[in-house]
Length: 274
Image 1 (cartoon, rainbow, N blue to C red):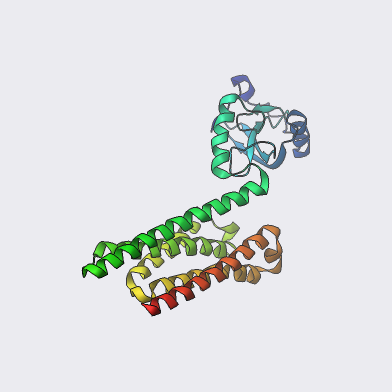
Image 2: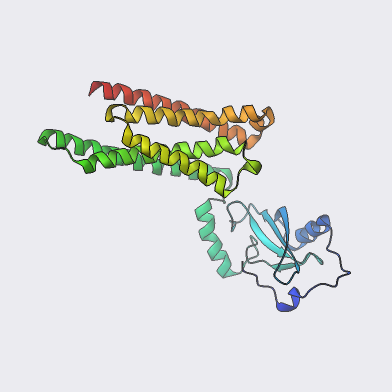
């Protein structure tokens, strides 16, 4: 963690001194950084045992250092800004340039229009990867059938592509479904266990299932796990189901789940014609 405060600003406060109330800190920050909206006050202690305050928030006019927030280090006793290295709109030129790269990575600028644009770009990239691999594999299979020779490498890549893609989709869906029941939404260890457990299972199934049924079965399972998201939300409670972020996620899950079942049915018909 980088801080730009001077050494005299980091001196230990007298034991009789008490930190400001959160409301006063927010008011002080509003005067110093107009437009920055505080969302979280994070109190901690440094190695010397001194109280440290980091305020996280956003400013819609600027890109942010984190996925959805910028940060400012505040003196908890006076309310003054000690470090503005990660504070949107108040950074030095060097840190502002660095923040631009993070903003481009997270897509945390331009409001919902840019965020949905990033969603579509992400889906488009995944779609091109999957369809591109499938086109190459199918073309390779047709050449092998004509020549009368089969390649284990083509079969391996076919299984790996189907297993990995469906494993990624199902792993992410499983995380959303499990988050309602894990303590505090789950820590990294729990989330990683859920994701990689589902991912590895799909890769194994891809290598175990017959070629004729592989795509349709894995797509159906992916659709089923995706549709579990709104089901788990409803079982957890109607409030979880109706929260605005959850409504969006549930609608996307329903649409994607139905699409995956449709794709599974189409794969089944195509495999039946072969």
